Image (tube, rainbow, N blue to C red):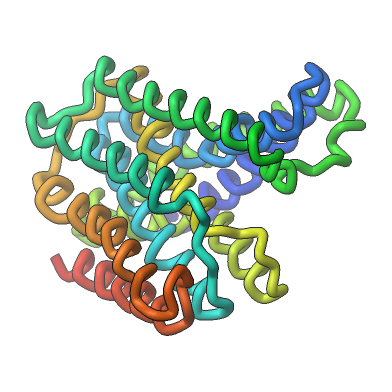
Length: 315
């Protein structure tokens, strides 16, 4: 029954997230917001909604390990699983601004998250606000850059949504909200049940099963793009997802409900895996072939992710 709840929960999260993205974009068109702004802000926040609802539901229910594990595991999966598999299928070029902008912002947020947990064993409302502030500044710089260089984020926005009726927007919003609410609730309940049944910690379930589940949309989109030899997916997009996971998901969750550290392993093990996966990207980029995540580099990332999963369950 618990496994069934997890599966149904994940399906509802994927469906709910998709309908929320569609309704948010369509609603933005109604207010005459430019495609560039929609792509950089509305789409980015809406695609983080499954992770946000899971972390918030877990925090409100007193399962802070799931709140933290969901984000930490998702960030690890984005690099090890999504980037690794995508690069194995088709090598990926690095973004021009990756080293100078996206990667440093990700490391700043990762460092802030570690510092908050290490010093006080929790992320308070004030600290959540600080994480969210970094995201707001990050978006401001992105918008300024995109305005100067050209609206490259328009590709993320479906132009057909511009003609969506008001009735459809409301219907999509309701479906999205219901899917995210029930999906997150059932996923958390199922994960806790599995942890109790198999005597595995909630932390392990969250950094593995839940994290992979909430990363399924990114994985599917990336693999399909790689198989079609499309270059639309970039390393910057994946790093951007990691930035939003910490800044908006942890930030907003902590503002609503402070997140308390329950398992020391989150601080002594899991977060160091996340830092390690983030740091390894820089040397990989400078190892020949330079500025390319080639197939053999993808294999390295993917094998490292498998090792992380095996060690997580072994512990």
